[in-house]
Length: 189
Image 1 (cartoon, one colour):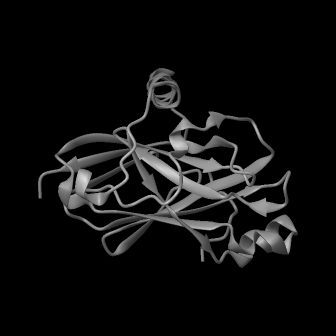
Image 2 (cartoon, helix red, strand yellow):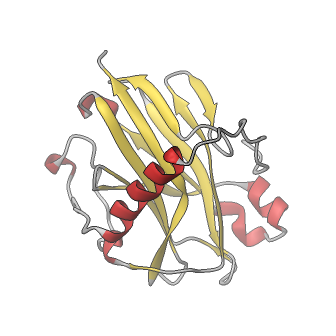
């Protein structure tokens, strides 16, 4: 498992443009109505989500801790914590993203984690064992704070896609953004 310590930040560029683009993209996702798909038949990369539409939950500021640690892109691992905010890959490449999220105020893992990709809600598999998170935060209740999101990229057309992760607080009453938006640059196979 990947430790939760952050990797050194890449050298900073002296331009505000990438931050402005990321902020605008995040704002469009956070404040725009979201499409919610309840069946994989509705979209090529939308799995079934068993909860009520999480994108309708109010954005809240909770006492949370979280990280998007790394992506498994084909056969290689790409660290994302403190690393790139963009992945480039050919359509059809297997993609899984791993991380963790806890509601420290409730002393429990987040009740759910999901991502939006082009406005489509994609649920992450939760309750992934993360003993490293429990040890680092000093609370054994966080041992199941991990999540994993598999994305079937064969159905994605070439171009840039924006992936934004959200956690749902332990009470299930609000959501919060996890990390920064991740740009997926899909190329032709």
